[in-house]
Length: 327
Image (cartoon, rainbow, N blue to C red; front, side, top):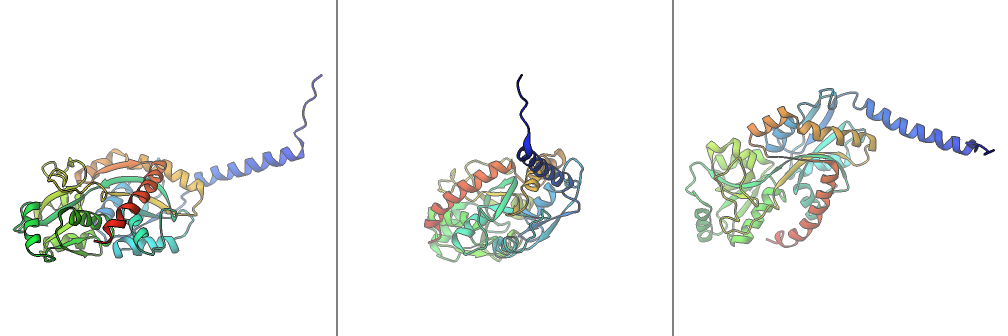
C-alpha cells in the first residue's frame, strides 16, 4: 500500500498564509475604490494636460471601470514642479490620490533640477496620449514661415521672444533643439503653463511660442502654426510641415506623453486593478470621439509599456540634455 503523505502542521501554515495573502489581495481589488479618487494635474485649468485629463477620466464612474468618479485638482507652477513635488512628498499612498504625468517634462526636470521626484518616485498606470510641440505665432504676426522668423532672429539677436509652458518641459526642449539647429539666438520666456504661454502669443506679448499641437489646433483661427516638432506630419494639421521637412534638425524628443500614475508606495493590488482598467477606459468610444474632436492625439500604452518608455527616455534625455542645457 502507498502511504498518504500527511499535509502536516507546517504545510497547513503555508496553505493558510497563501489563502490569506491572495484572498486579501482579491478583496482589496474588489473593494477599491469606495469613494471618488483625486487626480493632481500640475498645470493650469484649460491647458492641454488638464483638458485631456478631464476627457479621458470622464467615464471613470461607470461600473465597468472604477465605479467612482475622478476629481481633477490643479496644482500648477514651475512647469509642473509644484504639483509633482507635492505628489512625491505629501500625496497619500492609499490609492485615492493619483497624478497626471508628462514626459519628457518630469524626467528632464529631475535630471536638471533638484526635484523631489524621478522615475522611481511614481508608479505608472497607463498612458493616454502623445502631443507634439509646434512653433506658433500670432495671427497678425509678420512671420508667415519658419524662415521669415529665422531671418529676423539672425538680424536681431535675442529680440525674438519665444514662450513655453516652463523650464525643461517639451516646449523648452523643442526651443533648445531649434536654437541649436538653426544657430538663431532667441530668448525663451517660461510661463506657468500652456495656457498663459498660448495667451502671450495670441496677445502679441511675445513674438513666437512653442506649444502643444492640441492647444494650437483648438486656437488655430487665432494663430499661424509654422512647424511640428515630430518625425512626421500630424493628421490634425496635415498641411503643417515638420521641422525635418524644412531642413531643420529637430526630432520628436519634445513630444509630450501624457498619462496617469500613483505616488510610489501604493498597494500592488490597487496599481494592478488601475493598470487593467485605465487602458480600457482610455479606449472607450465616447472618449476617443471627444479626443479626436478636440485635436488631441491619442496613444494608449499599458503600465508595462510606460515603465519601458520611462526607462528609455531617462537614458536618452540624460544624453540629450548634457548638450542642450548649456545653450
